[in-house]
Amino acid sequence: MARPGEIPYFSAMQIYKDFRFEAAHFLPSAAPGTPNARVHGHSFRARVVVEGEPGRDTGYIFHFDELSSALRETEEDLDHRMLNDIEGLSAPTLERIAMWIWNRLSNRVPGLVQVEVHRDSCNEGCVYRGPSRSTQLAAE
Image 1 (cartoon, rainbow, N blue to C red):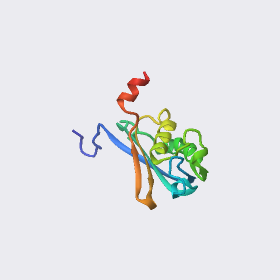
Image 2: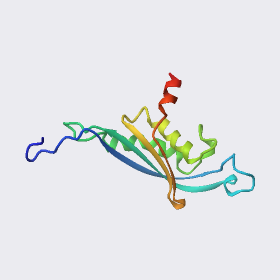
Image 3: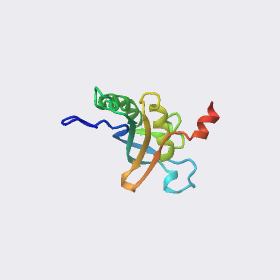
Image 4: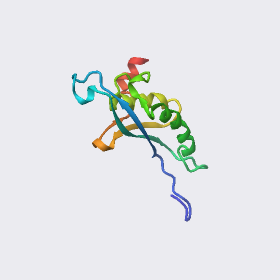
């Protein structure tokens, strides 16, 4: 129990950081002549969620400056780009963009638990919580 004036200690919390990027793409699997088969662009919003226990001394899970630094390179690699030209994104669906961001950040951001990618103008998004346990076991 916290003493008067002391902030109680919580065992698990989540923080998140959003970033935006503008990018063009097309979907190679789309039927010829359909809008998704042609090059078009979107305004994307990505959210990265980190979970952990706040440090007793620091009071935070992961410093937002460090999180911003980790996201900066990823944002720059996506912003104002043709997504199909980026290695690993030859078919850039929301699902694959979310996995691509996860793969870029999972070794740099301890406690990463979720990546979301949104196309707000379309009211669409994808939530990725990392590889499934069966996928992880198969890789080992």
